[in-house]
Amino acid sequence: MRILPVLLALAAIPAGAAPPATVAVAFDRQQVHPVLAEGEADRATHRLVTADDPVRIASVSKLVTTLGVMRLVDQGRLSLDRDVSHYLGFAVRNPAFPDRPITLRLLLSHQSSLTDDADYIIPLGETLEGWVNNPRVWDAGHRPGSYFRYTNLNFPVVASVMEKASGERFDRLMARLVFTPLSLDACLNWTTCSDAAVARAVVLTDGQGNVRRDALKGVRPACPVVPASDGSCDLSSYRPGTNGAL
Image (cartoon, rainbow, N blue to C red; front, side, top):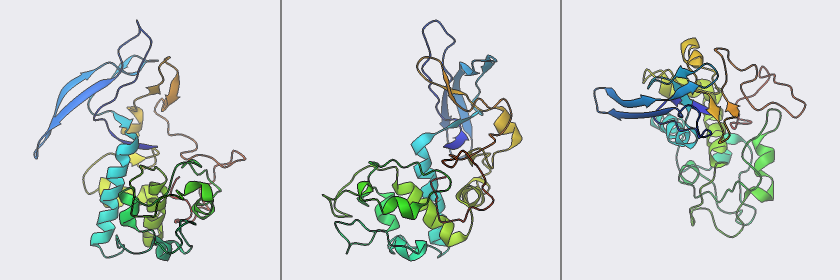
């Protein structure tokens, strides 16, 4: 659930309907040059998309997160090769290879031996510690560092480590470390984007044209994270480092 200014947005829609929002951008060291912007950012209002409209970029966020990690490494607050258990305060170990520490380098390069077999979306009220203690999230057949396996769960662990090292919630930390220094009106879960960006959100639809996400109508979501199992959404008591998946 990550949002950055649109680079490319393609949303399949039924035949005969308005074309999907499609944007192509060329850029150099000095500036950005939109080369194509067509289709509707919001089919309900027929608002046309522009190259400045924010849209979810899904796993491209992993690259952006890594920029934040490296800022903390440059500051000496994180090490790529230190056992992340040191930062988190609990053991992060593949039960089949308990002698092999899990490091940021392994997590960022998808060699941690974590899997997505138990999902990677950890709702509010649950913890990363509880998640990684589930044997299902680990690949028992490959020692950490020996095998590449693309795994989304790596990055909730990374985000939790960043929170522990900084004492800040991940969305706010990324705004401070990456988005603000780069003058990007960007955010995670719409929490730090400007009101103007929220008003221009690209609405995501599925192949049948049903709205899936971000039909905001200029209003931030009441709950910016996956709510707790009872439907509650109180972030005031959240402790940074316990669930970077939020």
